[in-house]
Length: 378
Ligand SMILES: Cc1ncc(COP(=O)(O)O)c(C=O)c1O
Image (tube, rainbow, N blue to C red):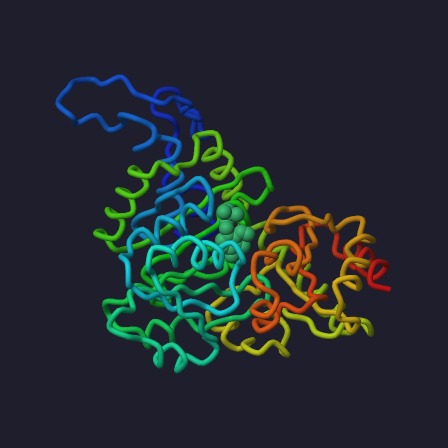
């Protein structure tokens, strides 16, 4: 099956008791056992639940993986990955990445003796240089939040040694535009909250892998720590995923036009969008993605927090809010919002200037969106 068909059908069967085409919300904590022999499919909803199982099968299929494991948020999914590690293990991490991931790494897990080495992955030699016998994982985000950096997953997969796990946060691309496992990754992570669910009404995370032992360990962590999504949220995610391809096509078309408009604007200093030929790794994006996504960042010639805030206050269609990937357009200021937890010096070093503005381009009429930005930037 092609991805467009898998999004609607993979892992989803009509309900066996009623024929309902939509997977029912099994809003139950426990299941009555048919016998006490221990062979009941479902027993307790922390361990597994039929609505969640359908979603996990669907998520696995759309990332070309065998296993899908869901969590109560994207952060809970990343947290589960880190629980695979031991004190003194080392992780090589993309230098510019989502602020919440940076916070989890540096303020929670560093405390338990795990070492995080941040490198610029534009040059894979920077990764090779810091690999030691203690390196257990490489954590890649591509495209990155908020700089839209693109890293070459194939090249990174080739540079790492076989015992090092390659994990990719694929949130910004979505499985419709990029499949890291096909490019050599071991593990894919998604904030389902974003493009997958797509309607700004769910917070959820997911992991996908083809490795049986790794999946078993992650299911064990999921059940042991209990950071699971509820059945109602699983239903909403399943419903959202059915239209991922249609939404994503429009997100990409609109974003390309807006990025081109911004790059010609006299008050805009720089535009970061993988679909622009001026993007540093445009050719890598072309080779590993099927589209360039709906996220754009741009900086202003007046490079100050006040300059950015003036724009943010004026937009009418772009709502000032955290998050991304929903059908409505959003606008945000990484320095004071999503990346506020990163010290200024580190933030500037990874390109997040004071005036940097990030937009999540929705699926509205693109001319209305351009007019809104035009009025707000002028
Ligand atoms: C790239 C990326 N990864 C992970 C997360 C965390 O996901 P969640 O907010 O669902 O916990 C986010 C949230 O913005 C994100 O943008």
